Amino acid sequence: MTTIRQEAETVRALQGLEDDSSSVRLRAALAVGTTPDPRFVDKLVERCAIEPEFFVRDMLTWALTRHPVSMTLPELVREVRSERTQARSQALHTLSKIGDRRAWPVITRALLSDADDEVARSAWRAAVVLVPEGEEADLAAALATQLGRGERETQLSLSRALIALGDTIAPALHAATTAPDPGKRTHALATQRLLRDPDAGFEFAIEEAKRVTALGGSGQEGR
Image: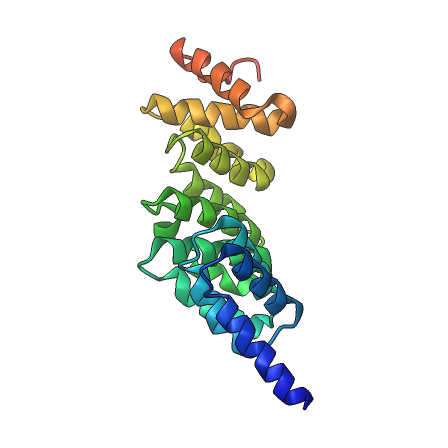
């Protein structure tokens, strides 16, 4: 009797993940994460790629983290290679939450410079979590190639990712402060300021860096 009831609950949860109502999908994802079952993994990954609501996607990610890494990791790595941008972005986000460094090889230079800002931002966040010990400087150099990219939100994400790597980013930032592109120089200077003073605030750091760049400086004098 219990088995029949459990089967019915499983079917109901799987159907709930596809319901037209976002609140039903949210409850279904919560239920799936509360009582993990290997049969849920494929559907959770599938829904991550197409779910339109942020808060439901976040619950789907949480539900995936509740399942064995041996089951979720291969599925998520496959999704990172998908042509669908949301599939890539959400898979990377989930990998960053799982934090298993066996996923590191999937973080390629192409992903770190993905044309879609949301995918790139997810890749940056995942990279700083998954990077193996001793490879932080190489990652910092790769991330530094993206300085100056996008709007404020994207730039802030990159600065946060770089700062999470600590002092190992110093050489890459220093090199970027002399780049021909003023946007790249400004972003590098702002990130340097935030590395020295995390409480400065990104907007303040950017405005200060703009003034330095406009005056033709690198911000290195007297540091």
